[in-house]
Amino acid sequence: MTNQVPLLLTLCLEENTILVSTAILECLGNPRLIQMMINDEMRSLIIHPCKDGDRESILIPESTIYQFEYPGQSLLRRIRRLTKWRDTNPRAVYGTFVPQINAVVFDLLNAQVAILQPNPDEQGAQDSSDDSSLPPGIYAPMPSDGVVPACNTSPDGSSQPSYGDQT
Image (cartoon, rainbow, N blue to C red; front, side, top):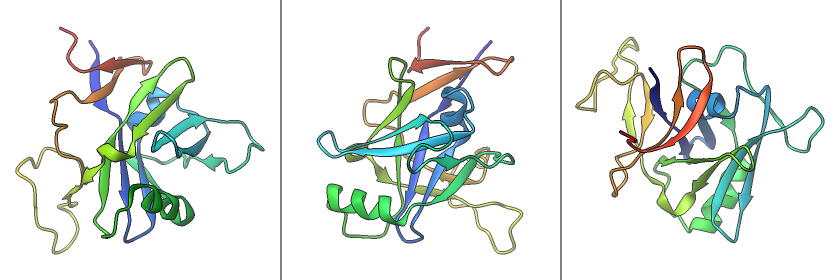
C-alpha cells in the first residue's frame, strides 16, 4: 500500500524563507544536496538533486521532519519580481514531479495564499484550520481542478510520482 503525499512548497515572503516539504525530498530520492532554480520564461521554480560543489547547492539538514526552512532572500526577491506579488502573504504551491529530469517543478502563477496550521504545543497557539489532523506547518488550499500532484511513498520508503487519484 502506498500513501500519496503532496509535493508542497511554501514561500514565506515576510520572513524571506522557503519551506520545502520532506515529500519533495522523498520524491527526489532523499538527496543530500539540492538546487532551486527559476525558469523566468515559464515562471516556475525547479528543485532537483545536485552534487557537492555545484553552484548554489543547498545542504539538506539530517533532522528534517515535515519540512525544512531555507533562507532564500535573493531567490524570493526574483520570484516577487517575476510574479508581481506586492503583499507579504505566504504563498504555497503544489509541485509536479518530472521523472525525465528528476526534478519537481512549481508553477509560481498557481501559488495561493497559504493557511497556517500552528503547532498546538506552542504557548498561545490557536488552531486556525478546520483540520487539526494536519501536522504543524503551512498548507495550500486545494487546487481549483481538485487534483493534488503527489508522490506515492511505499512502506520501504521508495517513491513513485502520482498525478491525482489513480483508482
